[in-house]
Amino acid sequence: PTRRSTDLAVMGSKDKMIRIFNLANLSGQGGPGHTGGELQQIAGPVGGLIRSQGTTWTDPATSKVWVFVPGDGGICGLQVAIDGSGNPTLVTKWTLKNGWTTSAIMANGVLFAAMGGGEHTDTTSTHTLQAINPITGAVIWSSAIGQFHWESPIVANGIVYMCDGNSGGFGSGTGGNLRAWSMAGGGGGVPNSLSINFSGTGGTG
Image 1 (cartoon, rainbow, N blue to C red):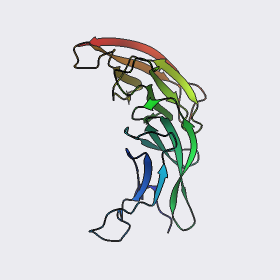
Image 2: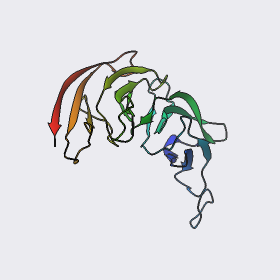
Image 3: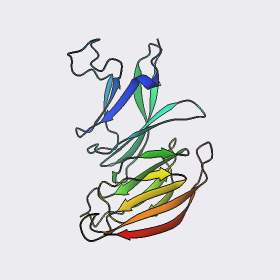
C-alpha cells in the first residue's frame, strides 16, 4: 500500500546527513530489539552540520509534502516523493546557501528563518531574518537583525518575533533586543511578495 506521509519522520544530524524513518517500524526489522532502519539517507544539500530544527509543510494547492532543513551552510527545500510501491524518498527542489541558519517555521504559507553567524562572537557575517517562498526558495522579504546565538523566530497572531544578542547575548549583561514585525499578505497560498511592517524593539538585560 502507498505509505502515508504521516507515517514518516525526517531527521538531520551533526554528521551532515538527512534520514527518513518509518514511525511504525523505526528499525526496519518489524520488531523490537533492533537499531538503524532508515528508509533513505542523503547528504545535506547545503553542507555543514545540521544543528537546527527543520519543519514540514503540505502545499494546499498540490497536496505535496515538503521538508525544510536548515544547517550551517543555509537552508534547503525537499519534497517527499512516493513511488508505486509506497517507498518514500526526499527530492531536493532548492537550496539557499547564505550562512548558518536557525530553526525554521512555516506561517501563512511562508517559510521564516534567520541567517548569519551561529555564534554571538561572529562580528563579520550579515545577520538577517528572512521570509522565503517555500516552493521556489526565493527570498521575498528580509530585515537586518543584531547578532544572535541559537535564537530562532516564532509567529503568533500574525506577528513575527525574533530576539538577538545585541553583540552579547541574553543573560550576558550586555543586553539584547526582542524584535517584532506584523505580517501582511500570504492569504491562503504562497505570496509573490510579502510586506512586513516593523512594529518595535525592546531592550532587555
